Length: 186
Figure: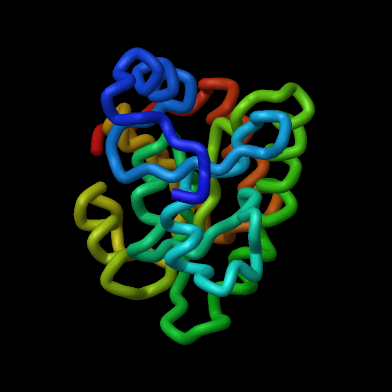
């Protein structure tokens, strides 16, 4: 290999790295900057989605479009998912633009404190992946639908409103982070 690697037989060092970076399984590719700070836990997914490395070094994006390749991130911690009625490419853009400023604000706040962002942000259209997620979490077919899913806690939070605005999203996120919302079981 042209890069540094920890020998498989060095169990003590592998164990320390697993704890340090929250590694739960293999294969895992974590990218670090020159200071040793984590850029992404999703190096493997990023390479698969960007084989020409146009977005290298794959710093976290504020809002992701839910897909089969990034759905694994739903299990890494709480995730805000905005489900919208979008079947064609490009129809998710207005939803992304709606939550992007809030996601950027949260990311900047926690980056300044050198802490990991406590919430990931996704938009999901009408496709098999979204349908499977709705089925698994017992979510209604309504669109738009604003949710926060916490798979590890097996909990969901659903914002039941007629219109989803930036103010609604911001208040929902703020209430979640302040632990003011009542979870429903998944």
